[in-house]
Image 1 (cartoon, rainbow, N blue to C red):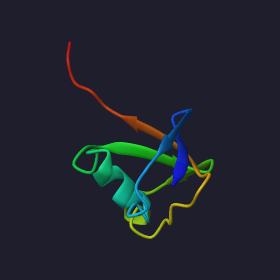
Image 2 (spheres, rainbow, N blue to C red):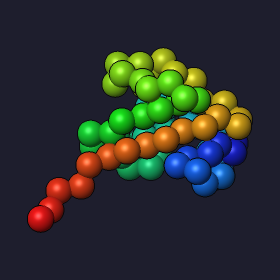
Image 3 (cartoon, one colour):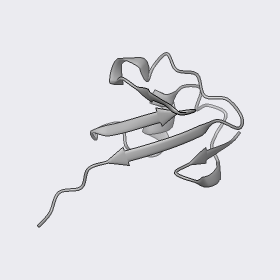
Image 4 (spheres, rainbow, N blue to C red):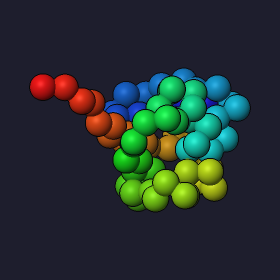
Length: 67
């Protein structure tokens, strides 16, 4: 399935049925991540119920520590 992530068209496995699945695929499931799904900011508790579909637009912001 093809989705746009942070402005880049990407191919993700069909097993990425939800936003939670996508975050796990991208190895971001253990990090603090802000997710915008089709221009709607999601609460963390909505990641498991938000279905991912062909052509969706995802914006991901995660925090990186350092100094």
